[in-house]
Length: 176
Image 1 (cartoon, rainbow, N blue to C red):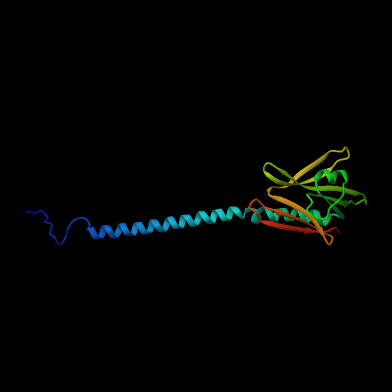
Image 2 (tube, rainbow, N blue to C red):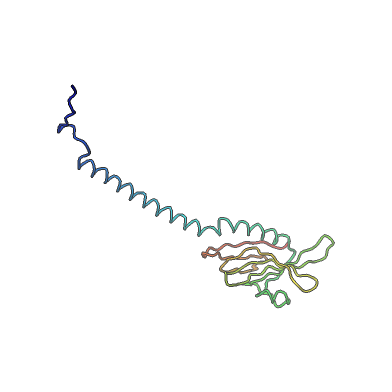
């Protein structure tokens, strides 16, 4: 005959109050550490998003502007796109448009414009090609900037772009 198991005080079922409180304390500390790690991750994500212009867009813009600037034979900076089209008085600093002149293979001169235009979504930098009929074709270099300013000091063409979060980058190039 089998006797039912007797539970003694030395072998109780369940956990003691001390074991439960220790386990709960460890869980609270782990959860607090996870909350701190999550907050740190979110702050890093915000910083990375702020650096998006400098890290991803600026190198591409620099490549495009570098190729355009280095192929130009000479240039004039104007205060506005309209002034550049009409051949107004050039400026040396803080222009919003630059008129570039390129020599072709048959030694004729072609004109192109790069202009900064401010709209509802910020400043956009566009490349214009005047057509013989008086119209223009254009393509977008970049958009969403705070500002763009063309300058020519000591014969070097520079454009300073201010990104969406206030970051500033300057591209330089000169005529051949």
